[in-house]
Length: 411
Image (cartoon, rainbow, N blue to C red):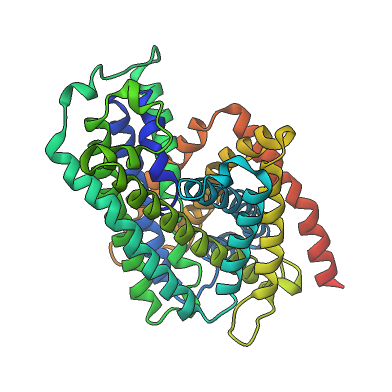
């Protein structure tokens, strides 16, 4: 979850005023509700590899499962390309040539993508070790800025409450959608569930407690930054965490925080490259994706799917450095939230289908599921009609592939 998003969100939210904190709270509550549902699903189907895909297949059948796998996979292309570009942007603090030369930036980005592709060709224990190290190193500077900043808050920076001319509800919806993007990935622990020891317990705990910990980190750091830097200054910042660090501890601290941002984005990329292989592998093993995506190497890594996905991610990243396609790429990045939220809806529906009245705490679990579903629908509406239309087109694009794959399977 903690990737490039949190490092830029305080600046993006500054244009809305103190009301954006309400957006953070709403997104946090929604993320926790979804995490609880995925925790329930992880316990209900502990051996199901593929997370949202696997749960949708169990509850709603092949076609719905394919749409989930397709949408989720495409969203990962967009996200990984954007994360790679963010890594290069943060590295430019240390190597200015990356901000001056597109060729150097592209070469660096491709190197990063394929380095983590190589990491993910190893056993999942190796991937996990890299992720643990990255998590510790990236969370430390965020927490430090957040905790230190609480002693220097200027309450006048949170007023006026709503800086826009829109209604409070409209702004809360917008800021909730923006901040919810930072929580995408709360379902990640469910995707390699079949490879996790004692998955029924571990996946549930990792999903729920990981999300709660992230909520604390996000809100603490965002409130601190917004309370230290006036909104009119913060909205112009390209590196809000680094700017706050410079205010507290001097110019050298800027580079320390920038290093934290590099580690954060690399850690996120490592985790999402794991996902870009795991989702198509699960779909392939179910006969809903080409067989090559299900092939494993000696380390039990779906290396062919990872390599194919990384190749597509590399193309997306290259497009970003073309002026004619830059705006298109940015818009596709906005589709990531939509493309991931739809699988969330399918997963919640599948949970409702699989949940029997005989299960313990049936009504409590059903209430959580209904609230999570309502939140996900709110996020979809908040994305706007233009993004919804593009998202629908994205899902429709995959339907011919479904019929082609299932026809070959039948033959």
